[in-house]
Amino acid sequence: AQKITQTQPGMFVQEKEAVTLDCTYDTSDQSYGLFWYKQPSSGEMIFLIYQGSYDEQNATEGRYSLNFQKARKSANLVISASQLGDSAMYFCAMRELMIKAAGNKLTFGGGTRVLVKP
Amino acid sequence: SQTIHQWPATLVQPVGSPLSLECTVEGTSNPNLYWYRQAAGRGLQLLFYSVGIGQISSEVPQNLSASRPQDRQFILSSKKLLLSDSGFYLCAWELGGGYTDTQYFGPGTRLTVL
Image 1 (tube, rainbow over the protein chains, first blue to last red):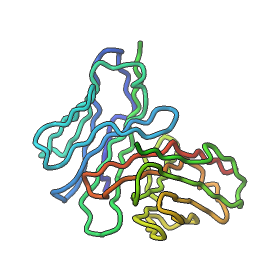
Image 2 (cartoon, rainbow over the protein chains, first blue to last red):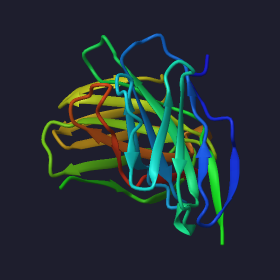
Image 3 (cartoon, chains in turn brown, blue):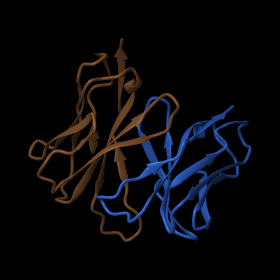
Image 4 (cartoon, rainbow over the protein chains, first blue to last red):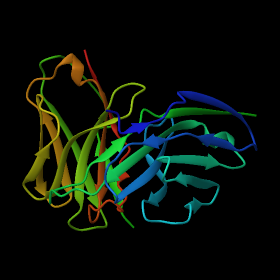
């Protein structure tokens, strides 16, 4: 079963407008973390924002905010005031609490490509 | 501040040739290190991770191997490359390894096997 689902393969957004990228996840753990990464055409994965399963408030980082709905198991990324430089792939990822002592896996969704139009 | 380097940036290799990709981290000690592979237009697949020198865990059985000869050095190798090994290889580091800890990625190596 897929643990992280991003249903939007691609989106267009007008410059200066806001865009919401969907992410749903599946876990039976109570303790987990949700991450969003940006991957521009250069390929580097850039960390954007984090939300913990016990965090009661939605995370915000500058123009990025995370709409966390725990009961629905969704963690949507909102980018406000889109800029041309926001054009990239965006990946949602999850880390679960692992019992194993060694390492902790980050599971990625398939990504959403965002193109910002001037 | 911490930085992570990968080299080479791009690589074109024939089928059956060996492979060595290197990842080094600066500005931190005792990080957890990860190798991921990304096929074109897809998400990331975890290949190996390491919590210390000489400690390697494999997530996917294949013809690739990893080694960690030094605290901040992580190497991905193969004795004989397959066409299916083509992809974008990303190294990542973190401190802690808990579910609240963030992984930070290097610039990646784009490998094409012909």
